[in-house]
Length: 215
Image 1: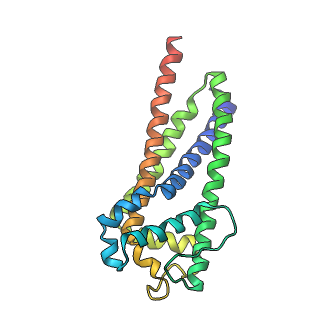
Image 2: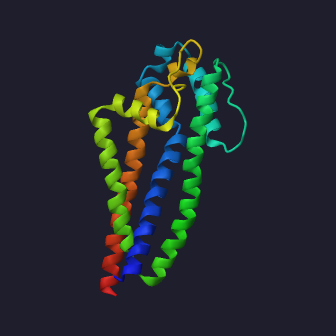
Image 3: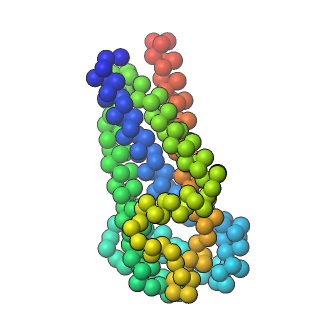
């Protein structure tokens, strides 16, 4: 493969990898059944003192808020919220917005690059994506497995320049329905989706390579 083609395939692989990660994050955010299952699995209703119906109602409002691109303010149906809590959720939505924009832009760029490569019958980018997309989950998965609490706290220190993420359950009772274990399940789901994307790219690469050889 020519050097310029290798550069193009590497760049496309990076774009496709970031797209897989971004889509995985947005998909996990929107996948409400994960939380609904955790309500009973983690005894959230008993731990928080709220009914399952009330928990779902407030969680759905939070997810709708994080999925939106608007400037509307978060308002829980039945839970109080402090000013630091409101600011924190605004910062969280800003982070999710970055992933949403990355997912949209990544899908568009990836489709263009893939169509270009299909016409040239070049598939090296799939192999590179498969490698890149599995490397990150391997590292992060190891950190989560070794010490979830450390990984959780470290992420917040990196993502936020304040301590508003440390909620007081008396002023921000929403924290009582969002246990750390649920966030660990989200992290594992994201990693699982990224690994699945890596596997798909690897399988498609092998299939395309065989077909090219047999032509």
